[in-house]
Length: 123
Image (tube, rainbow, N blue to C red; front, side, top):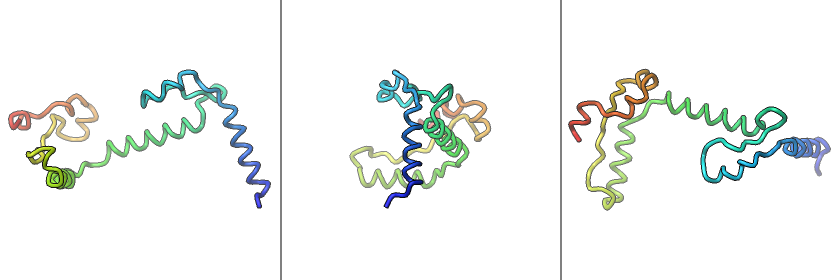
């Protein structure tokens, strides 16, 4: 049996969804991961879109601040190479960027896109 409280919550949720004004750009969302056509609830972003953004932002922050386990990644790549030798006969090559640490990378992301001298020479 459904309780009155459950029906009210469901009805309230449907009413809240009806209050969202959808943006005609919403159709373009199928072509991009960009946050376009979010719609609006009054003068604000809809709660669902706001919460999804906060989650994505938290995940991005975690990704930036989590240290990369290079040894595990290298072992996984070696295993893939053994499982699928047709992909590449070469073992994975570990290279380093000009960003010597996380702080440098965050302050100078362009250094993260450039190889350091030793890595450049080894290629």
